Image (tube, rainbow, N blue to C red):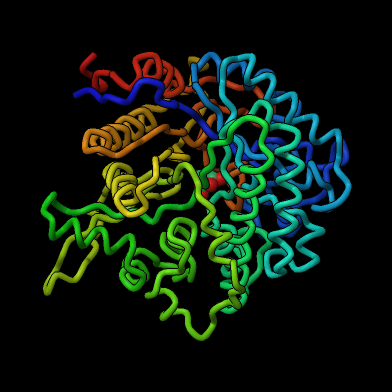
Length: 466
Ligand code: FCB
């Protein structure tokens, strides 16, 4: 069984500023809500913090060297807003901006295309104190910040993502308080914030279109609440589609925690269709945010690709009366170290259903797993689970491509082990192992496997059949 991907397929890996950079207080960086979260006892596993993380701020050269060795074609990074604008607006911190300059140059020299995410959760603390995303001005703050980044980096960067996973930073951050800023707001505030987040996305797209020096390719990177059918039959496919796009079904099946904004359509529909989904509007009334004239047009400024962060999904079938139902996991079913179910079909089907609905070129902006990796007696890091996981997920992805999905790229989460938010350093998602006390990097077996896979553009025999 081999996999085939288009010529020029973008094989990449991803990380995010707060999770790897460290240098939390250096060179004039301002605090972010995640710095604030790390200071609060009991918020992050064993009191871990992002203060040093992978020290990527100082070790980026070595890291880019390793990326080159693995052979990734593109690297998805994010910019820390408060590193560039210490209070989130106004004065630009030249030293912070210069770091991204150096990083981008280093990547380009290594033949790696930088794909830049404007916002991956490290929101400026000073803006949080001004109301954060609850303040409608947040869209303008974000546009101004985007202007600074675009002005400086867009002569060399052509691929952009506006936001990473609003479902998380609004849902987990503002509604459930598990992520920064750690608030537990009511539905009305959560929806208001989400509307502003969408406005910010639209404003950033506008800035990119009008100011980028190299023609920009623009997307975003949402959580995908994924589902796949129990069999290929159209009835079950329809059930799986409903488990991704029908608001009530998603709510019932896909959302143990009952996070209001944990779905695909509340975000994806405004961005692509310029309107909120009717079923969600109904469900959320009367807590809906004020929507001003022109808002929906702004939010739906055309984008070029639809990103997808997919780690797992539900197996769904049409039950009695055709009502979609999720199949329970078998006892002892495969799970990652994080206890996320291993469901390879979620990747292929997730991408396929999104492509059907939104009709945009697709990019897998994140996929991967945390596993129990450590340095073996032989000094190597053996991670057979990661290799098997990636291979299975990629086979599923290849199937979606054969079936006609316009898929442009695939980004492994993550290039290296890093600060996994409220889980601290407990979860290891990297292709590169990071020994935090010494900051030593070791390519895991999976990195070498990925290297071969990239060389062959996805054509690789199954493990054990070489
Ligand atoms: C996603 C985040 C990313 C990382 C992975 C494991 O939700 O975008 O930063 O934490 O999960």
